[in-house]
Image (cartoon, rainbow, N blue to C red; front, side, top):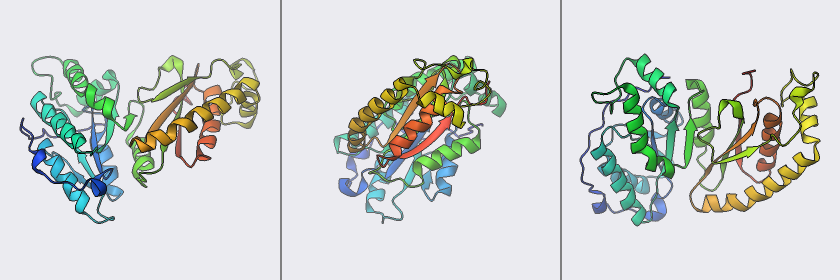
Length: 311
């Protein structure tokens, strides 16, 4: 999945303060799509457009506040606007940070979708596109990736939703974007529960991580080994453990105490990673069980089994 995008124009000095904004109407109606070059920004923008969002690409940071103002004046059927932004140069990114800080001072905060991928995946995608990295200068492509990652660090920390596209094709990324933004209900938590195997690495887009390796491993049962946590026999084996029930009860209570605060603070997206050794048995069964409980709290839930099928 390549992400070819043109360089963005812009200027180093923000003009956002001159734009009047209706905070009551504008809040929560503007989405910034950003992330690493090659991580899928163009794909995400295309999906949003198909969902009925008005998508603006190559927008100078100084105009974001004006877009926010337009959103505030739009009717309910025209209030979903996505702006694709990146960090093609340091002065461009400094301008973007200034605009976001100015909006925050006025009580406004656009939602932020950040597309992420590992260094090796980004390098392969950039090489496949046969384009240099916009920040590599006279150095290697990997140097450009590292420079961009450092430049984007603060914006990534502000993101409402981080999607790691390292192991996703364009269709899988489209499914995740659709799940998160098709409804765009500002009062409902959008949760993604990801099962994974620790031996393949912790998902980089996880907000919270839970380790299921305290439970007996069905891998050591010759009957259960070829199955997965989606099979009834494995599910019964994993969930039948007293420690499994205690974990689910405690984790559900913890999440119940957090979700209301997340929504109030504008963080509508939450990614929960549930791991075991290989991501086939325990994590899959527990992720499915946790998702069922979250749906009982009126959360919109997507379940992703990242490493199922690797073994």
